[in-house]
Image (cartoon, rainbow, N blue to C red; front, side, top):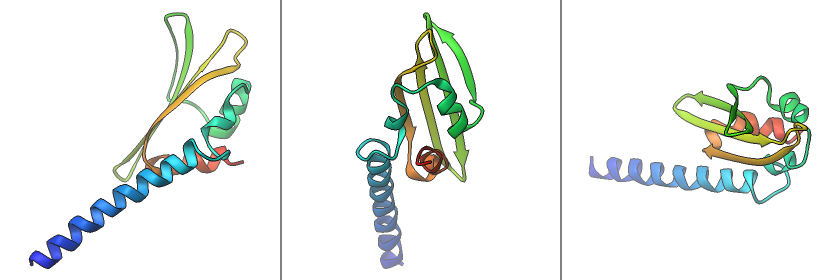
Amino acid sequence: MKKIIGILIASCALGGCVSWWKSNALWGRSKTGIETLDGQPLSVALERLGYPSRDQNLDGEHVIRWDLTYFGYVCHLTINVDHDDIIKKYQYDGDAGGCDKYIQALKK
């Protein structure tokens, strides 16, 4: 029984590391992720990512957010655009399992 519990703990820990590595590799360190939206028109993000979960103006900034929950995985993707609807800032919070749909869409 202790052996099984040890294997389960090790598997969960390794899975978390792989998820973290995959997210970081795809989101910020290669040119296949969210950074491809920097300086692009908002229409490019909408075309690739689909309809956002939220679209609001906060303190004079236009903020668009996509939220996805998938089998316990979560992903939040937020972009800020200027008055000409050009993407100026972006961020994400989530893991590879939750963000995979968006990662794949951004590779197109």
